[in-house]
Length: 148
Image (cartoon, rainbow, N blue to C red; front, side, top):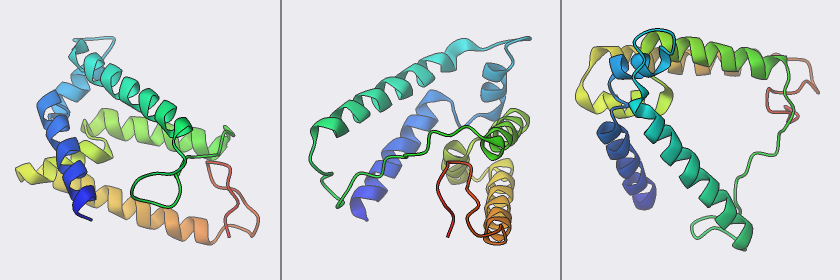
């Protein structure tokens, strides 16, 4: 738990330093047809680089240091729920200027928009669990796993 807390604090600090906690800046980055602010391209590039290096490292290690196995997504199927969820995520991100990680980190600033976003996100996650629980047996989730 201490390791997770420390890594979460480092992640949140990185989000704060990069400007990802500022919804106006994020919307400016997403506004490619208007007053586009390309500065977050460097944040995106850094994140993709670190992630790619992490996946390369995982291939060389027998197991993680703090868990029994690596948790790597296996789903590769692109289906309607995945596309719909991606579109809904993008619309929410574009309208609010928040995505989940930066929104949670922005709670530390006491900003009301961040609190409203996180509350709406938690409500949406709860609604999803209720809907998925009522799907017919054998239906698949948006990542291609069987739901039991």
